[in-house]
Length: 139
Image 1 (cartoon, helix red, strand yellow):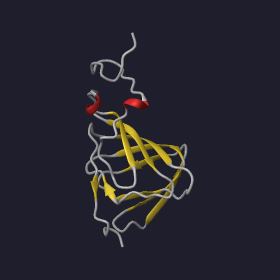
Image 2 (cartoon, rainbow, N blue to C red; image 1 turned 60 degrees about the vertical axis):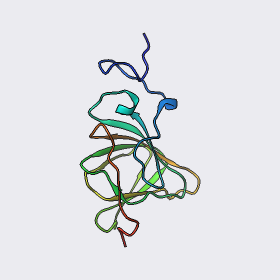
Image 3 (tube, rainbow, N blue to C red; image 1 turned 135 degrees about the horizontal axis):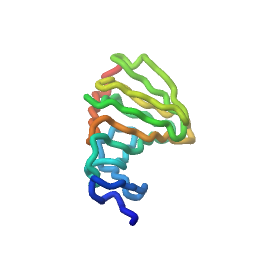
């Protein structure tokens, strides 16, 4: 028997893209869509979803409180800045995994003028925590 995302928590859940929830916590410059979350009727200790930044865009500076984040880059290239002043920088490309520690201020930048970057994201709590910091957080 095939089940959808609204099945009981003791069953496998299949969540198709049309069911992803854009009503999750957001940061300016990006879009998060929940795929595994309580809002979709799935009881889980972790959260999972998709993250996208459009070509030439960047997110605001933010952190995820007590959550750790693991991301897998599906497509595109992302420049990630982090730290107290945003001076630490790395690039991630399709096929890379990213680990973002709890409470670490960071920003994602899409250097491409043509291609969005997309990540699969898993967070260490059932509901995503997004703390957007003021625009003047970094010099």
